[in-house]
Length: 96
Image (cartoon, rainbow, N blue to C red; front, top):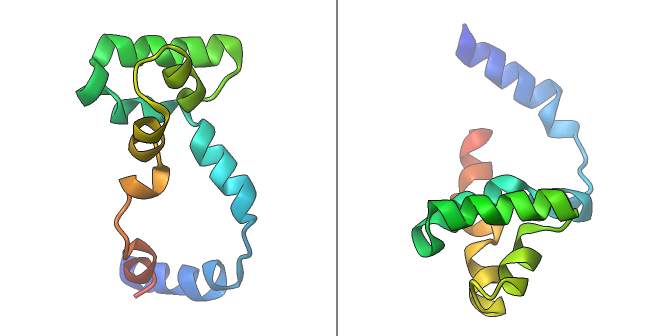
């Protein structure tokens, strides 16, 4: 039953959707949850501080990380790239 519902949803709703890629990338890049990727590198407390500062100052995570000197820009961009946090074939499997 659930399998049929998922197939129906994919065919009747998801298949015809159009997305604003730039807007979605901005949303993903500004998500405070990105700090979880930082914890192994800078520690949980520092990652939490980064999230708090980003929220308080209305900045994105990557800006705060670079401003605080926690990571160089290249490393920060690599670690905080939302695309690196998902499987490459996720979209293919989701609709299979």
